[in-house]
Image 1: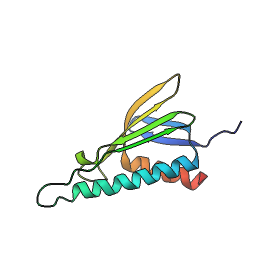
Image 2: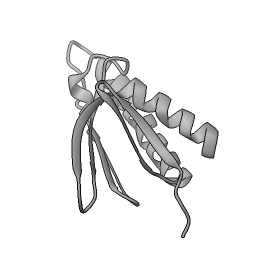
Image 3: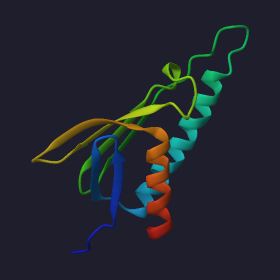
Image 4: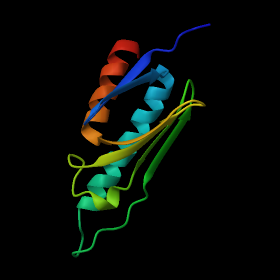
Length: 115
């Protein structure tokens, strides 16, 4: 049995760690890069009205089920955006919110160590 590397997400009130593969981390990073583009487009108002952007809904099933959701239309910039995180398995479920910039930082650190 191989043990997955642990991704640690720092939250406003503590942190959570769970098994996460480098491949899944790269997939999440691609989803976040797309979200960043959507946030920038939503913030760039043309003619006083922004073009509505699709929300990011990232899902991964591994050691645990991870879902990260963000609606780019409600945040004025990528630096103020927050994401909703659901992390669950058969014994526990965690629903919380985290700053997008912190998730990006945690993900980059994970990829530096395990990528």
